[in-house]
Every structure is written in C-alpha cells, then in structure tokens.
Image 1 (tube, rainbow, N blue to C red):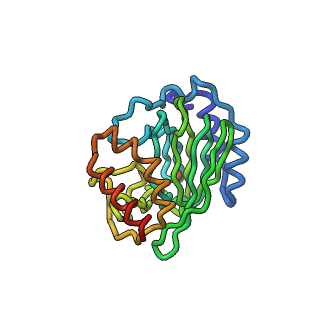
Image 2: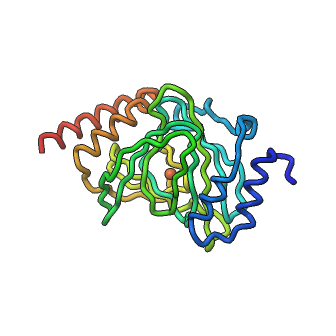
Image 3: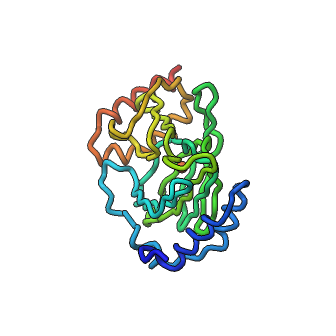
Length: 234
Ligand SMILES: [Fe+2]
C-alpha cells in the first residue's frame, strides 16, 4: 500500500492495474463502482493554478500504462480544443457540472458536432482521437477525475496529442496538456489549421475570451474579433 494515496484512490489504482482493458466499458464499470470523498481529492486540488495555465492539472498516478489526473476548474477555466494522443482507453468523472464541446476532424478540417453539459456524477468515455473542449461555464469551482490508458505503450501515453487553436490558425502537437495558448516548450510540432466555420469560431471565442483577458493578451482578442468579422461577412 502506497501511503501517498487514500484508501479509495489506492483501491481505484489496484482495480485498474488488475484489469486487462479490452473495452472502454471495463474502465467505466470500475469508475462506477469507485467511491470518493472530499478528503481523497483535496490533496490534488489546483484551483490556485497560474493564470497562464487555463485550468488546474495535477497528476495523481502514472505507471506508464495508465495515468490518473485530477483537473480543477475555476469559473471560466477551459481547455483548448484537443485530442488525447496515444491513449487507447479512458474516462472522465465529473464532480460538478461542466460545459463540453465535441468536434470531428477530417483532413485537418475541424467541425463542431455537439454542445452539451455534463452533470455531477456523470462519466464520459475517452480515447485518443476524441476531439473535444471542456471547462467550467458555471459560478462554482468544480473538479474532474481523468483516466487515460494504453495497452500498446508503456510510457508517455498522452504524447502526440493535438491542439486545434483557431486563434493562431494552427494545429499543435503536444506532450499531452491541453492549455489554451500553450507555452512553446510544451509544443512538439505545428501545422496550419484550415479555416473553420463562423459558428464554431464564435462559440470558441466566447469560451476562451476570459482566459485572454485574465492574461491581458488583448492583441489575441482583437485578432479573433477581426477574424470573426471576416468570417461573418464571407
Ligand atoms: Fe480531454
């Protein structure tokens, strides 16, 4: 027993370690049976994350094959639009209500598929090519527990994740974090993002604007507003 973890977290780690995951439903079943108390999670809260990081991200456990993270979201905290690299299975458990956007990518073209909200206690499935954005559109702090795993890799399973950044008209390849306006040292490669539809751009702008205001990056806001006008008049 690792004394770093509470009984409930250690039991989740044990159950995931013992499971040969062939189907994502096995991970969802394990999470559905897991129980968490405030005291299990409290040591991993990062609501005081720096403004330049668009949400709080704390690694709880990583054995190379799977990892567990706790994300902390203040009101207005959001991820960039991202996928999950080499992850082959996983899930997100919501401890509060979270905003969610689902996208598809075909030939680098980003398209919006769904806008929805996850409620407290809900579970969502995750795999590598899931492209989405999530965050806190409410007025209270919320946390989410994330599990990412792979059967074919034994290290860096979040590597090769993509970030779709309409404000920079770029697709970035990263080590796995999904911060908005990510710092260059976390970026492994970049390519051009084809022009996206006006409604997607407008929705995205509404979600990330507060991040850029908090960081006083007003030039990005101005550029996005110009791009929005251009798309609207096209
Ligand atoms: Fe994600």
